[in-house]
Amino acid sequence: MDVRIGITATGELVTFDTASSRPLLLVGDSGRGKTTICRYLTRWWLADTNRHAHVFTPASTEWADLRCHRHPLDEWPPTWDAPGCVEGSCLIVIDEAELLPATAWASLPLGKVPVLLTARDASLIPLPRSDVEALPCVGLICPDSTDPVELAVQEGQTRLDWPCGTAAIIADQRSPLDAPCHRWNTPTPEWVKAQ
Ligand SMILES: [Zn+2]
Image (cartoon, rainbow, N blue to C red; front, side, top):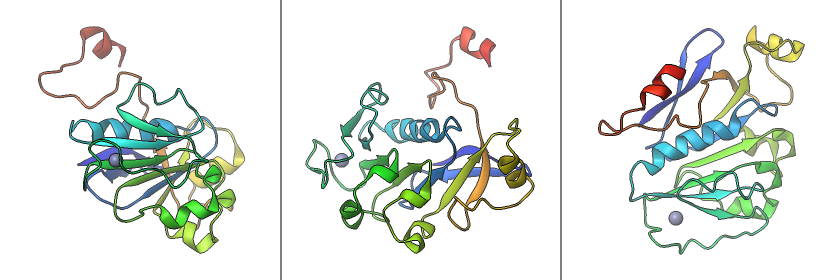
């Protein structure tokens, strides 16, 4: 499923294919929506009830509402013997990839299962820069920002603290109730009015 996550500064759609096993690294300053995009893509993944997610995060309560196995970032390697861990059923989310120990990266099944990663500062990810730059990466910017660095990115310049080749995007705004919707699960009138 190709899921829309935002647009570029020139208005082109940016999507992520949840059926792909390509990883996705999201970078950006605090509050730009990295975790929100991860949660949105995870909700799409979990719309198939045969699937689940493994979330590695320092925020123990942030993912409590989703059907996922939460793991502390310093507990690696993880145990992949959770009920239902079969091929095609697992999504891995690493929220704050800077905190994942260097030794963990070798056992991360990149390219085999979908992996979503976030980082506020990708230069702190304990990997050679070339390995970080091999990850498909999008950088989140805010269209209303007055920060000169973000304004420069909107005009097509690169950010030195982002991996080479990072695509700058303006993330779609999401509400807490903005979940994948089945036809029989229509939004409430109050929710529609609020949009
Ligand atoms: Zn699993």
